Image (cartoon, rainbow, N blue to C red; front, top):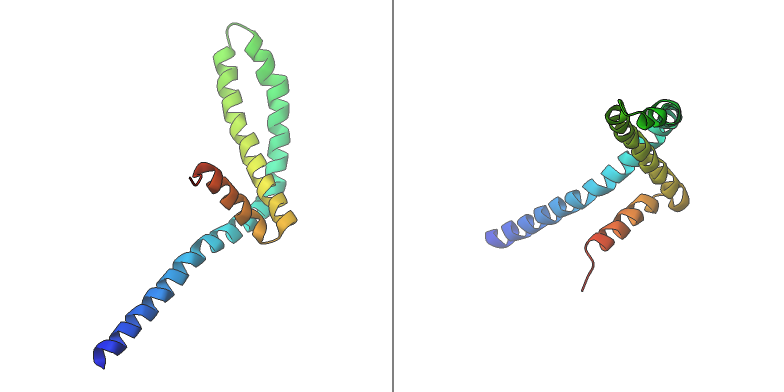
Length: 118
């Protein structure tokens, strides 16, 4: 009798731990969406500034023979700003289109592309 109760308690604890572990990605996605919505206006302004810097400072400097390394390094740094803005925008727009399922469906689709089944 005692071992049966202990076995049931162990299984219940195991199920509770599995459910808690399954909840972690959902909470991370929801937190990521919240943070994306919070950061997007700031990133849009920084993205516009980065575009102006690229067009009027970095591209002309890439033409001259003395500064292409500087221009290339600057463009690489600015590409991170463009990428972060695009990532945050896509997370916000996917969530807006699919509500709570939006980001998780995009994540699952990407995972299925990375790890195709045979």
